[in-house]
Length: 204
Image (cartoon, rainbow, N blue to C red):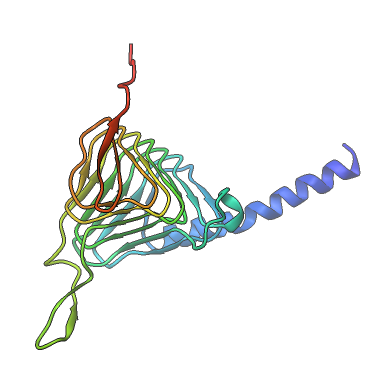
């Protein structure tokens, strides 16, 4: 083995070291992880005591500017905000600079990918208070979100509370999704509406 090859392997090992440390951090924070998963950059993950965050096998979290062609502007954010909250990413789910915050339940099916800067939120974060004030609230106004298998969530789009997306749904970039979208549909706009369909896969 040449000196250049040895140097290349050493560089590769050095680049992997931060990912191993970040993975250890996620496990210390109590995330349920089905190895292997891939971390590019340092994600922000916080689990409220008693809640659960689970990552299926081969999940990818792209939190580095260099990890996405669009140059992600922020790390991936995974948070639970109440003791009963649940956040679940199925096998082979991919996130790029995406934010997912659960006060109740967010479930994302296998093989779904979320584009750069997209957000999935199951609560309003605030409720009206006395007079013109606002109260911090993650639970009472929350509604579960469920995203099916093989969906594509476009860059900068937002999936709001109570929404269910069927399998293989495509959400256009910048869309704000406030209502359910049936399987094999394409939705775009603000508020999002169905603009087309895609063929069902031949599983034979």
